[in-house]
Image (cartoon, rainbow, N blue to C red; front, side):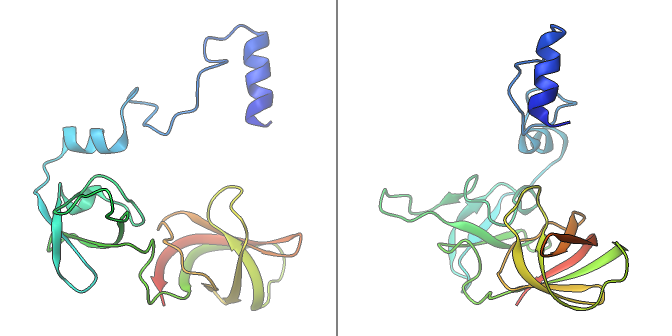
Length: 184
């Protein structure tokens, strides 16, 4: 069933969550964000926010708290209204640094190479051109499959441990779990 259909039934049966808004938080902890939970449960050390060429631009509250592509939660030394948004493009947990750029992805990135594990194919699947997605209802990304390696012809920050699903036209080829993802 689609979520809208479930909500109709929930309203019909007068369930208290029938009109509750969707949540991006941790549902089993209540109205708390992932970052709030991490800060409450773990100890983080402040570190430097750096540019792609290594210049110190500001500070952050612990490299492990940031996701690639994130644009909030760190402090830049210059935060004037005309400073463009900065995005996390890399992080080094050992050095406790977060690298940011005014570009959402590293400027040198042209494609993403993904190694899959636990693949599950629907019938025989040959290498070659295909489309891919790693998020529900995400726009299909032009790709090429070579065994258990998929190359996306667009750069993306791809979350490890998620599933990558591959298609040829309307046909779902199957997919696998993302074991590694490298911007090229």
